[in-house]
Length: 145
Image 1 (cartoon, rainbow, N blue to C red):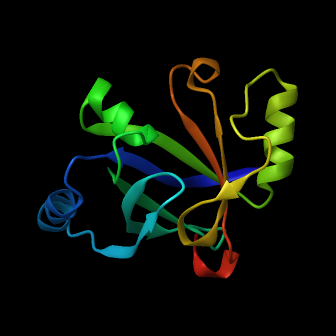
Image 2 (cartoon, rainbow, N blue to C red; image 1 turned 135 degrees about the horizontal axis):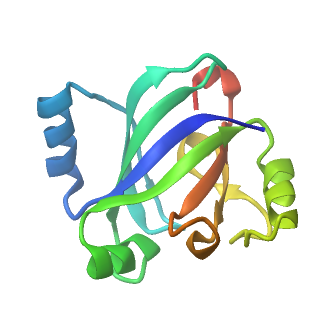
């Protein structure tokens, strides 16, 4: 069962500049940052608030680290902006299977490792009203993501 909006992914050309915009404009601070070599991105998670299920909601800012990454290709086509929405779930495997049974394409056969050690998969945007959708199970539910 999906329990919250875990994060909204925003693609950007310059992570540091974008982080500074969100800090100066809204007061959001970086909660976590990392480089995901597999996905070819450098990212910053800005915590927005805690949620009633022990999780949290974030903005995930994504800067490509190489030209062949999915985010780099997306930026080249669309420019900066909202890249995806992610829903939190306690069971990414089960929810992905249930959603797949409803005819929605799941992009990974097996969930992959995402931010902060979470398990993730994506749903095809053509099956989700044009929105790339991510399902996220936190590595440690008590950690808030």
